[in-house]
Length: 57
Image 1: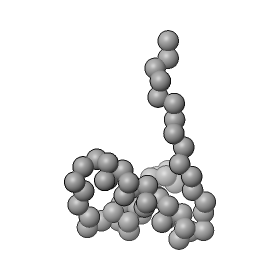
Image 2: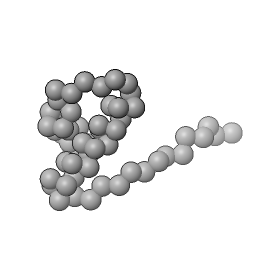
Image 3: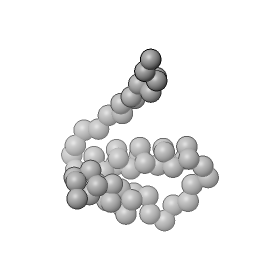
Image 4: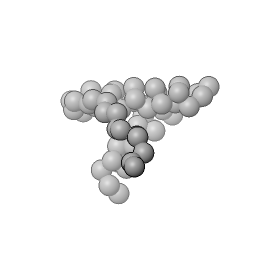
């Protein structure tokens, strides 16, 4: 597995398991919070990056 796949596996198991989400936005915030929590536990810095999603001409 790639390292990101292992991290995602831990986030699902340790940060998201047992939770129910009303909609995709709640899930997205839970994932963001899970990534931050996982980073803090491992003493890693995290930051959000917004990718430009404008279609190319």
